Length: 341
Image 1: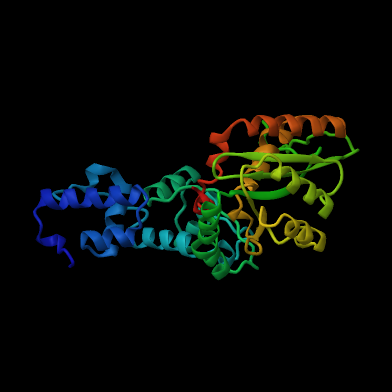
Image 2: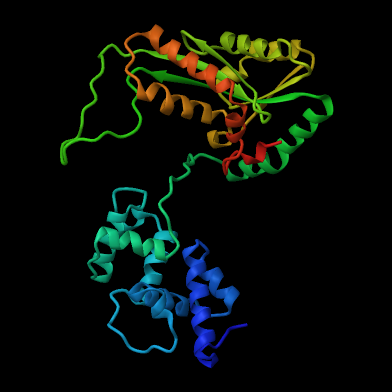
């Protein structure tokens, strides 16, 4: 039921305005807030405009007039809808992510209003928006296959594992190079810094597997991860395992090689492989092992030889192996929490 704000006394209307604006700034959708409070969404954006023009005191319903606002309710609704519903590429921007400078330019072009970058950031915060690192998806990914994996296939795998006392591992391979760098560095304004490194680049390849209980196993290899190397890693997972081992892998040809299938069959139920949906690395908690390794180990060191690189990688993974709490946290991201115990 809609609320006729005009019929409310000043005190009640003031509290309603403050409650609505506060909920939007906490991150709730303006559409949802308006529906829950029984007001028109255009009215809510007008209140947001009032707040922007003078803070909480400007929401006092007993006050009238005041200086004209640069952004009225209609303009603020347009900014919110554009940022949340449109891709920058649709508006002929060269970049697919909204930046404050792009939004600043958007407001200038479409609304004829010049705002400073800090004012734009403040506006976005007042609209309940925040700067976030996006989740990437391959365009080839099948959303239905992902849904089926999360809601049907994996729960069945977990039930089977519980019934036979199996340990579930999520496995992945990765490679790191000596010229990988992470983070930022201070430099003179307008002068892009150059990171010097040896021209003789080298790398190291690895396999790892993590379990929802916080267990981690890994192997560093000198060459490529072939079917033979993959089978060696699977053999290591079986050593001293108290029960069967279930391994979740992606669809890489190495994992589906005939020799691998024969090896799995020879284990007579003590080892099973299951395959993630295609183009869905975000579903694999083991991806976060490589993210941690690249950003907290390799990306912040100057390495001069393959042996030194492999030594740093091995030592970092050994430290990580002794941190089950951190490993378990890899299963609590928005895309991996389906795999928690």
